[in-house]
Image 1 (cartoon, rainbow, N blue to C red):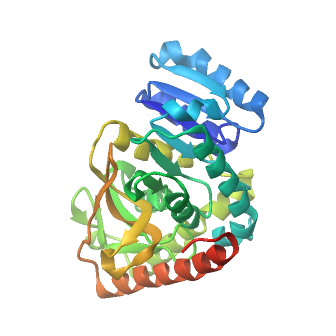
Image 2 (image 1 turned 135 degrees about the horizontal axis):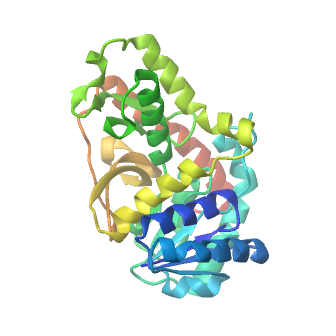
Amino acid sequence: MKVSIIGGGGLVGSCAAFALQCGGIAREIALLDLNADLAGGHALDLLHGTPSVADQIITSGGYEHIPDSDVICITAGLRRKPDESRLDLINRNVDLFLSILDSVKGAGVKKDAICFVVSNPVDILTYLAAQRLDLPTSRVIGLGTQLDTIRFRSLIAQEMKLPPTQVKALILGEHGDSMLPVWSYASVNGLPLDKFPGWNPNKATELFTRTRGSGAEVIKKKGGAGFAVGIAIRDVIEAIALDKNQVLPVSSVQNGCYGIRNVALSVPTLVGREGVVGTYEIDLWPKEVQQLRHSGTVLRQTLETVLKRVGGN
């Protein structure tokens, strides 16, 4: 499998490439960036590590890599400021993203390729990609709340002094302010989280609040998130490459799940080589369903503003 990362010279793109290299799943990783020297430097640095990791082809360049790419991962975009919501990025990032989509289309995309959107605001841009690219909607996926979910699990594990890999919990909805925690399924190796000693509603609220603000916290401390985002990207690409049919909270255009339509957001999604294989309408608490639908409404309102400016429906 060949993965091309548009924005591969940046922090997120290069971290994604490193995570993919360490995973050893992709046969070829190509880094594309306006800063060709930076992308080339990252590619050379990664290449030097291949003898100790996997037999992979690591390259850099431009859109000439797109026609034979199996996954086109778009990470390019302007960084979010510490006091700026992801949706505030929209006016600064939409034009850049649309120009990238035009270049991708112009280069030619394989019929069985997957477009994987990471750039923010990811839900809005995922919807635009599904509209603009000549691919089935199922083959356009956004990172969605996969990153928020692993952040959530890591913070729960740290607070409760539990092994992170055994903590299971989900964040759904928007990758942004209206995201919601799915406490109804939070567990530790199959055991309900709310039954563990020391767990209480106040702790739950504190952990979710910190999760929701994690992106801004990392930006404030180091200028931008990279490592965890790279791992989240690897999670999704490995599900595609290995045809895992794995349930992940990724963003895709919804057509009725939980009564939500004509907007891209994260619901429990079966991900495999075909992209979105299906979605699961799991039995959530009524309050959680209400929050998820509210998240869809918030996103749709923003999307309508964007579509009026750039065209679409």
